[in-house]
Image (tube, rainbow, N blue to C red; front, side, top):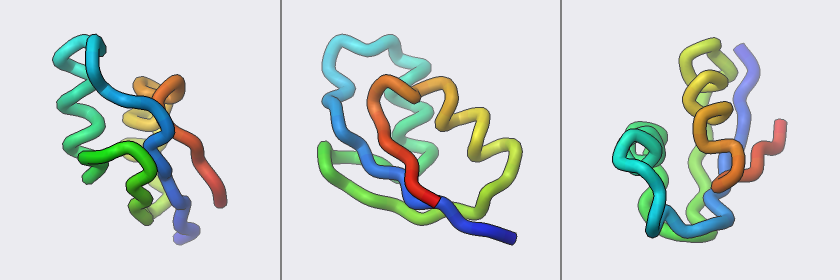
Length: 58
């Protein structure tokens, strides 16, 4: 499958707990951190939940 790069561009401070947990599940802990994941519906759903905090490149 294809992979996507996810980069955290905004802080998780003042975000709801569910969004903080979603970032942790993606493996993002700090601003400017980059992780690579498979392009699956589950990962895309998590990215959609925190789209205002991350950038995605294919």
